[in-house]
Length: 169
Image 1 (tube, rainbow, N blue to C red):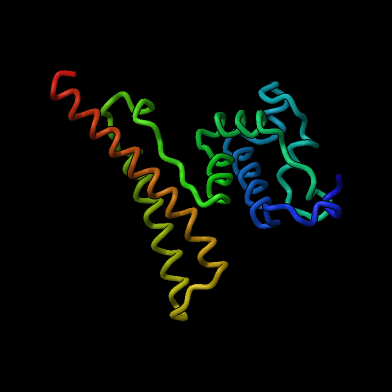
Image 2 (cartoon, one colour):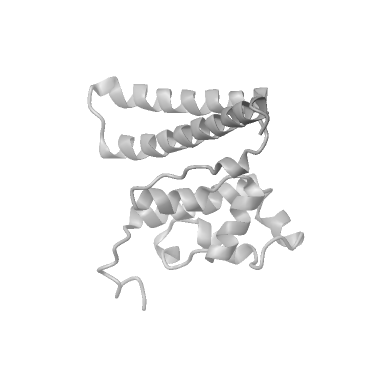
C-alpha cells in the first residue's frame, strides 16, 4: 500500500517526521552512517539510512526497521526512537531503576541535567516572547520536558541506590 492510499493512518506526517529526526540524530551520535556501515554495526547500508532519516515527500514511505532503530539508539546511547514513539502516543519514557545499580552521580550527569534544563528554559522563554505559545513552540518544548523528566528520574534512581547502599542492601 502506498502512502497515497493510506489516507486514514492514525499517525500524522509530523509524528513520522519525528521518527526520521530520531533516526538522523542517532546516526550522528553513533558516529555517522559511513562509519556505522563500514564497521558493519548495522544490517542496512548508507542509502537505507539516508532514506530513513530524511523527511522529504519522496522518502515518506521509507523508515529504518525497528531492529535498526534499536541498534542506532543503543549505539548513540539514547532511546530516541522509543521516545518519539512514546510521545506520539502521549506517553513518556521512564528509566528503570535496574539501569542505575550504582549510586554514582558525577559532573557529567549533572552537566547533562543542566544542559537539558537550560534548553527547556530557553525554549519556553522564546515561546513566551509574544505572550502566547504556538503549536510549533509546544511541539519543541514537550520533548524537552520529557528529556528533563527522564533525566530527573535517572537521578532519583541513583539517589535511591545511595539510600539502599546506606541501608546495607
